[in-house]
Length: 281
Image (cartoon, rainbow, N blue to C red; front, side, top):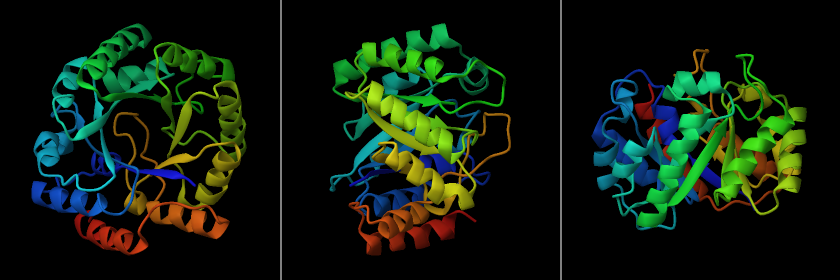
């Protein structure tokens, strides 16, 4: 059995045309009944930097939560987290850390010291408001900026987060640096070394490489995956050309062909997919 997080937030944030709030509401409410474990609905970040996310609070106010699917949002710093924790509908507060200081500067205008201070404040806020803090480790499989990268570097940051009480840590290949063998090697290593932590894979990749990379992660021990209907998205702050997310339909096809179970309602998934094709044009 695998868990699946659908991330319309990651798809929308890189989309040049501003999608209407009414379309976002209708789309998100369709996704809430597909059977995803989590839907990553939006970001609390600078509206000038990511204008697509300016209506996140209004969107959340209009999302139906009459299913078992939980909501996640991304926050750019503790100040934004102060707003995000006020919503009763939100379960996960996700801070996008990175093991590359170059990327932290590009994405958040931050560095390791400042980001760990932000994480500590966000953890306190989540504890106060009964939310689950999530810290994504971007550039977890290498980076194109020349920053130090190794298994030891990755482990050091995981241990920093683990020591703060985090037990769910997504690993992101933000600029598609890893081949399937590195994904398998690192995933197997972190699962073995940190057995009390659940790891999620947030993968950006060329479509033709999806099955091999999913196999590599799964047989390395990963049971929790991010995806985006249509495979759209990519980080607009990386300074690199956007590399798409894993298409949810390809993830489901891989799971079905491999005999791996999931909780998705395929009829509802197809309905949401048809709507996605209407708005992402």
